[in-house]
Each structure stands twice: as structure tokens, then as C-alpha cells.
Image (cartoon, rainbow, N blue to C red):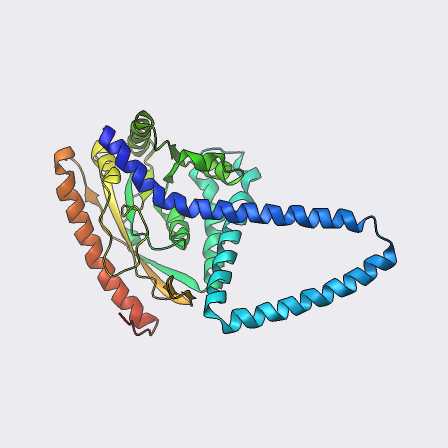
Length: 327
């Protein structure tokens, strides 16, 4: 069980990296608001004529900057890449923390994430990242389980948003530091995130026990990225063992979910175009009767299943988006 605690901590680290980036942008946003507030206080000491002259000058400067930014974003794929990601992350923060007052009426309830989820899906479409979900008939909401997804980018937040309403009682695992990243950590806690201390083996064991209990007693669906880090190649990265330990411990079902390759997004080349993507929910894999000794074979079976589907969906996604992939 100690080994399971160590590996599940590794599983949670990749999803937490996206959260850390979100919080960084949130800090920037609050800093910008503070600066604007200070500027407003300075203007309160100026005469009306000085304010009019300053506003005229400022408006002209802002218009010039806006026009310049528009041309840079239009002409430069790199600028457009960073601009889209900034907008996505900033909007994700607003979507997450905005409904917090409403979440207080039902703390630790997965439904608290539904409003942020729908907003995230809508904004993703505005940026050009749209998803089609297949295989909904494979979802059984009468029992809990482990949901495994391949991990490619921070845009996987949209995938989580797509799955959250249809999976049922969903939750995720995050490192405990996220809890103290106010107000984002509060929002995570309110929609039922399980927090884990990666430095404390006893804490990791405790979280595993909580997860197994949640699966069996609350019919919860735990969402994991088993690769443990982001990949965007033709092959899925090797899976970590943590989520499989939880599945065997709780004798739960594993629900593989495969997302087609993000052909429209190229991090190294700094390209963020528009793209149609496919999310495929595969049939469940039962862990009934399995023990720790069966975990390696179970991992291999699930990874081969997801790899085969990933290749097929990625090939289909190429044709849908009329892209010629260059290797």
C-alpha cells in the first residue's frame, strides 16, 4: 500500500501542473487589478481638466496599442499561440472562482463544477477547440470507477469539462498545496477534489482508502491521467501504477477514455489553430477478483486498448481537419 501511495502521488502531479499555471495567471490578474485601483486613487487628486486631458491621451495610446496588438496577433502564429493560451487560462480561473458563493450552499458536491464546466466548453469553442464525445452508451452511472484519459495539454481541462456532466459523481486528485491557492483551492475543495500530501506516505495511503471508499459507497468516478505527464506524440507514454492500485483495491471498473491527438496544437512550433477533436469512451474493464499481482498485466491490457484507439482516432481527426501531418 505504501508503494501505491507513492505512485498515486506521481499520477496527480501532471494534472496539478496545469492548476499551478492557472493560479499563476490568477495572481497576475489580481496584481493588475491592484495596479488599476492605485491608478484610480491617483486620479482622484487631479483636477477635472487634467483628468480630461489625461483620458484623451490615454485613450489614444490604448487605441494604438490595441491596433498594434491586433496586427501582431493576426500576423504572428507565436503571438496568437500565447494570446489564446493566456485567454484560456485567465477565463478558466474566472469560471472556477466566479461561482464560489453558489458552491457554498452544497460544499464537497461534484455538481459545483458543472457551471465552470459548461463555461469552459463554450469558451474552448470560441478559441477553436471543439470536441465530439462518443461512446456515452458505455457509461454506467449506477456504480463508481476509475476513468483513465491520455494527457496532452492544459486544454485537457476542456476534456474534463466535457466528461464531468456525463460521468456522474466525478472527482479528481490534486496535491495538497493546491488547497492553499486561494481562491482556486477553495473552489477545488467545494467541488470535491481529493488532496494528497506527496511527501507523506501515510497521507497517500489515507487518500487511497478514501478513494476506494468513495468509489464503493458514493458511486464516485475518479478521473486520472495515467501517463503522469503530458505527451503529444504518436505513442502514449508508459502508465503509472497508482490508479491501477486504487482500481484493484476497490475492485472497481476501469473506464478508458481516449482523446484524439491535438493536431491543431503544436507546442514546439507555437501553433494554436482551430480543430475538431474526438473523445471516445471505451467499454469498462472489470477488476473484480484481481489482486496486486495482476496489476502489471492489467496495465498492459488497458494501455494497448487505449493506444490502438488513440491511433485510429488521431488518423480520423487528421481527415476531419484536412491536415497533412508532417513527421
